Image 1 (cartoon, rainbow, N blue to C red):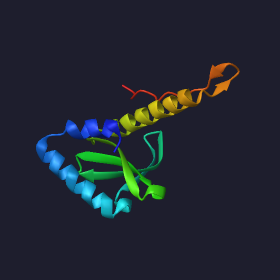
Image 2: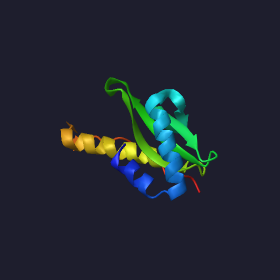
Image 3: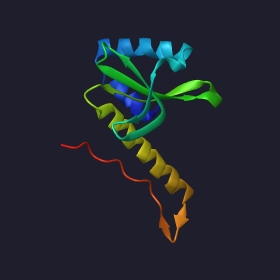
Length: 122
């Protein structure tokens, strides 16, 4: 689980936490249980899966790390439109920026950063 997903989990209500923990157990034995995200709401989340719980009100968004035989949870959030998917997209962008900064990839004297995620249209 990413640090941000840990924060998401900590913010959940007690009853929702119990339901999330139940889903974590299911994922540990059946990682393919979720639905592929693909290109959702114009966001490229290819390789990520979404597991619905709490009467479809919440989502756990994760990826399968085949080489390490486990899943990495990127976020847990309410279904409310595409907010959880936008949150994951933003987290992915931040990770890409951090990687590029660490590697100091320079092109023509300037770092090439990935395209910043778009804001939700009003």
